[in-house]
Amino acid sequence: MNLLFIEWLKIKRYRSFWILSGLFLVLLPLWNYEIYSGVLKMGGGNINILSQAYSFPEVWGNLGWWASIFIIFLAILVITLTCNEFSFRTHRQNIIDGWNRLEFYHAKVLLVLSLSVGTTIFMYLLGSIFGLSISGSVSGLFSDIAPLGYFFVLSLNYLGAALFIALWIRKGGMAISLFLFYTMIVEAALAPLINHFSNSKIGNLLPLQASDELLPFPLMKMAENLMGAKDGFSPMVYVVTSLVWISLYYFAGRRLMQQRDL
Image 1 (spheres, rainbow, N blue to C red):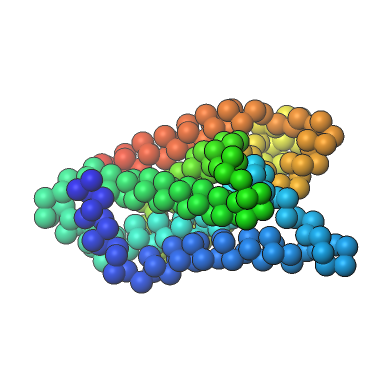
Image 2 (image 1 turned 120 degrees about the vertical axis):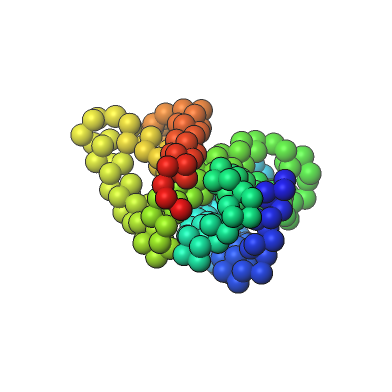
């Protein structure tokens, strides 16, 4: 808690922290509200074809999928905060002031964990508001909320990967570019290629793809359920795979902090 408190003192006046976290906290509900309130309608504007996606229990998976896109803002935040420590040599000052290397590293790990917990709580509150506005019943507040747990795992995965890249590259612009390039291009192209040539779904187990598979696009999921199709691995396989990757990020980042020059 002491490490986390000191980390908070370092970032609470940092403008980028409020801007990037604010983009997640503001744009996610606004985007979903526009869909929920009827951007896409049928029947002379009286029927919102996506409104049911915001009722219990579908709201958890629907919000989780959109949040898996907006989590990029928080990943960029983690990279920026970490790389700035190296750019402005504040990491050296922390160690001069009495921290050891692992304490500095664990402060960043705790930041990642706190952001993941905070965003999951925010997701629950947001989903509760949408769900209650449609059903008006509190019975759905705790029903089928597994997607919230999946989003927590996804958040840890994305932010953990961002932290590792930041520790490895140490240059903010390069680290952000590499993270976005890998996330949006490399895995997006590599996963289907691996699946095609291996005639399996092994490509779904790539680092970030494993978490993405936990929260599929809602309409695709509905179509698969209607057709009775079961494609890929079970959610538990993706959860375990994601946790393995998260552990690898942690130990790889720990090794970097212990062995690289300050």
